[in-house]
Image 1 (cartoon, one colour):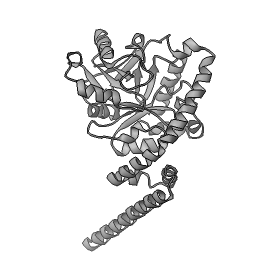
Image 2 (cartoon, one colour):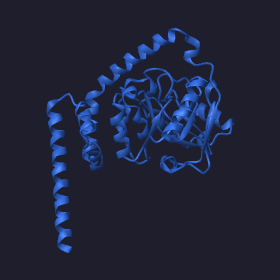
Image 3 (tube, helix red, strand yellow):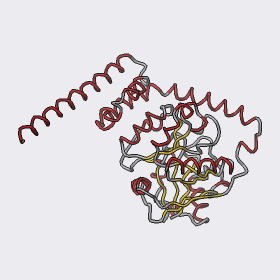
Image 4 (tube, helix red, strand yellow):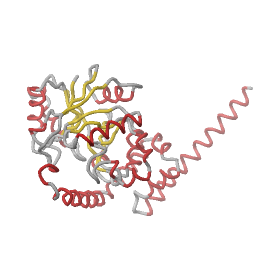
Length: 316
């Protein structure tokens, strides 16, 4: 099956100029079997698809739900969650990349850096966190090793990076306009019909993937030249401001996730991660509430281990 694994539509991304219907028709003409819908910090495009999925143009074509998430310190990250998992926090940009990894994995999703060697602020290897912690790449499940909107040299560097860290590579056009659609492909050697199918495929020991594409000459970088650096800086400021405005809502969502998942609490027991989590809460009351939740979890686990040891010693 052939997929475009990085797709933006005007139903879900404010900077996209192509509708989902147009996108699908173009991919069908090119012989594609499906697409991963990865709008910016939003599932709006996928929700639009669900309301219209009986339309004729969507038949015999697979549309998977993904998202491209803007972290505060690690650039853009592509995420796929199981189809039965609903996570509003993924529509609230601004989480640190390390905490994002723990949240996604605790709920059995997968994630990987988009255009990892591309523009500063948007690509993980050009962000400060990576310069201090390059080992973070080992925590991902895949990496985008071909993106039609960055240079061939950057894509080559991404492929070498994925090889170095043993990550499966995918390719996506990163299309925002019609003339970019289908310029990158990822081929799967067996059917992928759902998000869970994709997650199982990508987390097997050696997924049999092949991918590639061609460079898109109509990107903003190609058109704007030196002015593009100024636009990137504006984007960085916009991203930080937007993330800050969403922090009260993120606090609520994190509390709800912690209440839902002991698995998530266990993953964040490590002191460094716990401090990172605490930084997400501006309210002292919320910080203390989360601290009590973790303390209760530790005491419960300690009592459980003690009970098990006593039971086992009685059997000897």
